Length: 335
View 1: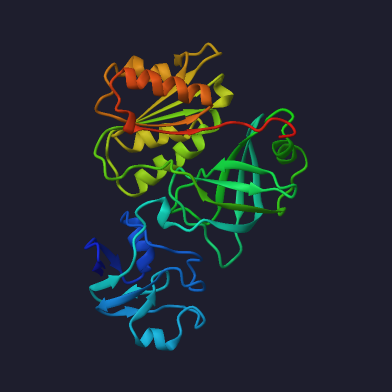
View 2: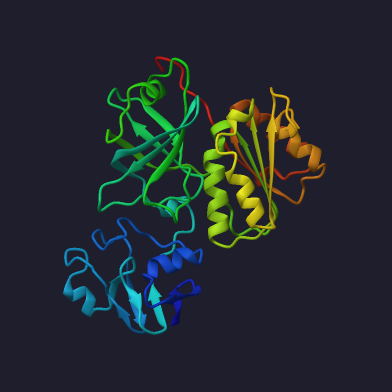
């Protein structure tokens, strides 16, 4: 049986069945509430039940003492509805609403998907989850005080692991370690989430997602988040690389396009002859859209691609405020 959940003070409503935690039901409906561990230990998702009946589930007394339960408080990561309910809680509306944290993590898996790209999966401690917006990034904090930034490639609803796409930079100290000596179960430390590159969900404009190389990582997160939350604005994904090996997850975007009529995928190669589109990926957008005045563009890749795309798209009518970018710059050896 499905119950109606109303959030105060926003007035947002969604449905939740008796088996789905209120937090998960809210996330599934596209409403982001604060959370941390998602297993009743940290108290980050605590809020008040203003009306209706709930089952508190498996919460730890340290996170929700009996006195707070009596006062109507609940941990939404564990609580489930037993009737229509009204909840008082804060909603996450922007990056500023999510705390930036320093967390340890363990390398869970290293999967080489191309000669120069590894998909790195990180597992946080048992009682921790990283809350973030699709498109944001983390920074590894290295022992010598240096930092290395990588975009999160998984969507927020799929947060059991934090997934990154790491490209090998010749001479790069950190990526050299990842590709040469790093082992699964290694312990690392990072700070995050960081960045203001994420989807403007208040807009109804069609979306162009532009990725160069491993700039596909945050584009993947944004696309999967949009699919999960039921956003059906027209979305075209342009992914550019030098050769076919550079499209290291080449089967994934066509799957999205096949399953969702509002999604289109355009791969573009610059240095290899093939049956698909050729040239610079940002120029492929202009070949398809001479007038960009009605669009939003989300671009991630090398600085040269970002700079060229911004200038050319604004010249084609794109409002400057509708160009969102995350520019990848690689650390030089010794920097």
